[in-house]
Structures are given as C-alpha cells and as structure tokens.
Length: 352
Image 1: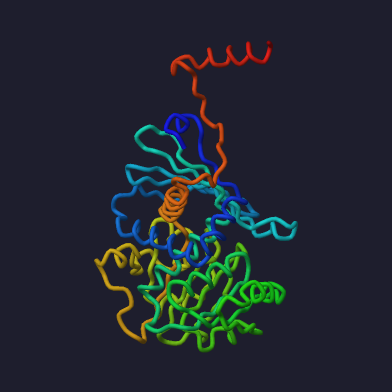
Image 2: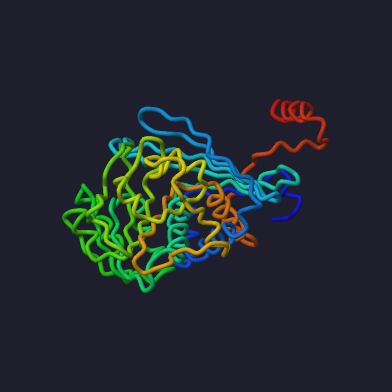
C-alpha cells in the first residue's frame, strides 16, 4: 500500500480473509509461525504495559477489553464469552482487535479475532508445553471438544509432535465432530466415554470447557505423576475446571498473576500459594519442568500480550500483499485542523 494511502485507509482482515490466510499458509505452518511471535513476546515481557483485562460480567457471560503496548505498537482486543450462545446457534466467543502505531496513534490493522483467538490460544498452549510437558510426550487428552479443540490438537502436533488424541465431551456429537474434522491430518484419535477413560495414558491433559461455573472436570485421583495439564477453559471469576487437590500437588505456571488470581484455577487457592510466571521460564530466568514425576499445570486465562503477538504476526504476514480490505476509517481533511470544513465539502459534493 502506498504511504499516502496509509494516512486514512486501515487494512481490515475479515473472517473470510483470515480463513484464506490460514489455509494458504497451511494451518500447522500458521500455528508454528504464530507461536514464534508469542514466544518472542513472552521473552521480552518486561517491555510491555500490563493490566488485567477490563471485564463487564453478567449472569450469562462477559465482555472484555484487553489492551497492551510494547512502546512501539499498541493493541487491544474486544472479546466476549457467552456459553449459552450455542443454544441459539451463536459462537461462545467472538472477538476483533486493533494494532496501532504508538508514535502517531494511527491504527495499522483492524482484524477479526474469533478465529485468530482460537489460533493464538492454541499456539500459546503449545509454546508453554515446550517448556513444561514431559520429554517425548506423544499422547494428549482433550476434555471439552468445542470450538477450540481442533486448534489445540494441531498446535500440539505442530510444535511438540503429539500424534495420539483421546477425546471426551459430555456431548458425544461434539467429540464426533472433532474427530471428523481432524481425520486424515496425521493423528490417531480415540473417542472416550468418560473423562477418566480419556486421561488414561495421556502425557498432556487439556481442559477446554466453556460453562460459567465452578465445575470439577478433573478430580485428584485421575492425575498421575509426570503429566502436564493445560487448563485453557477457566477464564472468569467463579469458573474453574480442576479439583483444588490437583492444584496443591502441581507446579503452577501462569501468565499475569493479577488476572489469573481473579479468573483462573488458582482463585481456589490462598493468595500466598507459590505460582511461577511463564515469561520467566521462557526468558530462561527460572526452570520449567524439573523432574519426570513433576505435575505441571499451565493455568491459562489468556493475556493481552498474546493478542498483541497475534495481531503483530498478521500485520507482518500481510506486508507486501493485498490480502485485506481497505477500510475508510480515519477522517483525513485537506487541512488537519479543518475537520468541519471536510464536512462542508462533503455536503457541497452530495448536494451538487
């Protein structure tokens, strides 16, 4: 795009454009490339502005804003979480995001983030598992086979070499859909009849349920030594997936503690319980997994830097291409101080 056009035209990535971008890149390649951006930004964590997301909770769900900046770029994501939406044929989670230039304040990109959030969540999970999962892990159980499940499976395949899946959902149709969608992609898949059956023999256990309640998806007796738990689903006050006793036995790793204490599995624990910020592991300051018998738990709630990474990645991916729509979003009068004059000129044009 010519530099002059960038003054008032903002690249917009629609849902259709995002799907085409993923498919032309290849889903696993896209996940690997995105994961590299996520890992890089965790490695420079201290450069970012950090604040827990601004949330508006209701009985049925939550609407959130997630902002951050590294001093050069600024991003925010608008996202909702409404589990009841599936009953009316709507998505539980929808989102869009903006990436902006800090120097001018002008937006550089407006993008759908419903699909992109699923991709960045999966990429983040797999990046973290590189540091926490048992060596040579090949089998993953996914408990909750909704909209996130296939992305999680492919990210772990692409980054860790996971090639065996054990699936369980309260809705057998969800499990069958997930199995069907992943068919032919290099995974051996077993549909299980219970959570207990699904976790048997699994090196990694991913929980990704959506109901806004304190649930017990995993009980303490299901978790043997040496596993890695990727707790993706719990993401708001009053919503958990794991029995408290599992947390007490685990080494717990989190994104941004002030947010995770409010929304994550650790809301069940006293505030002085030791947790490790995952950026410290990725940057090499502290170790991740330290023994084969250690139970590691990534209490993931999703943080703004991950959205920043995803938007930065897409922005770079689009550079030099025309795989976006040109959105007339910014007023650009001939004289920057004459905004009203721009309105008058429009009136004259449309009245002619």
